[in-house]
Length: 179
Ligand SMILES: [Zn+2]
Ligand SMILES: [Zn+2]
Image: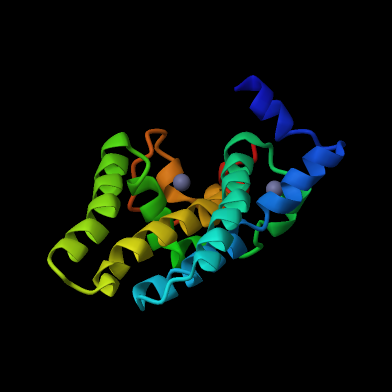
């Protein structure tokens, strides 16, 4: 694990810079993977779409590792919005979703629902698109990882130390994090 953390914190190697560049493509990669679900729902899937989706998982994974293991890189810092407090309010539902989905129980429920939905729909002869809400939830959660990464300074859910949610206005980071 230490090796992995080191790899994602190499600021001055080509590999480190490449991981940063690829990891920062995560939001786009999530969009591509989600968009390529559409042919599946329309029963018009193509093996090529599946291959592209598989390849696009790589930047998503690197992005998750970047968020989880790397220090805030220069790009991360440059992407912290000036109006973070307002954005944290606006994207409060995503920050909430991020925290709600962190526990093991939530993960197990999600995995079971994601695995069972297509099987059940096929078994009872219902159209695939009825599973869209499950996918929307999944992609929204993936996106919440990135949004939370950028807005964590203002995230009310990070403030009580146990991942819970505080029903208070987002704090002003200049008051909270500067002594
Ligand atoms: Zn970064
Ligand atoms: Zn948080």
